[in-house]
Length: 191
Image 1: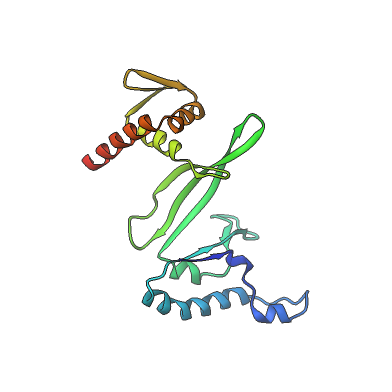
Image 2: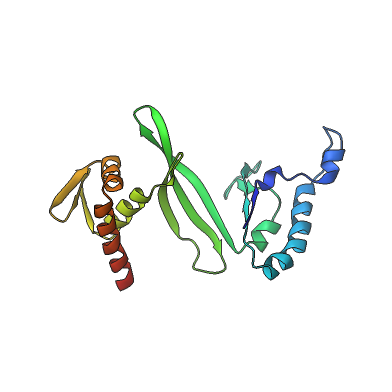
């Protein structure tokens, strides 16, 4: 596994050697195009996974369509087998402190499976993706956990009020989490 953290930070040699104010159009795009032509065969032969992390930029003067674009030209878009659009859609707070992010991931391109799928999940700082949040969300989607207003119930048991409280209860109660997960797996295998 190779991760290139930020395509935007890759700098062509001529830009490093040049003066500060020099304008060189398309250098970054040419660098990416050439690099991907060279790397594609090697990546395929070695059965390696390469993850490119990129940033969004705004196109100037776009009147219609999406003004957002990624750096490095179009080569990366064409060569990629899977492209994911990952966005923060909200903050998870504990009082005034932000303890995580609610994140939405959309599959923009997929050569190996159906594209345009979306998923939302919690990323907790210092812990990663919240497993208890995933279990709760999927259980609610599959009607294993019932949601009425802000109250959640599992069978005849009231789990609690508010998503965060129920998420914490599932995290603190491994037997309950395991039981709900088993029912989720059973429901998914029947589909």
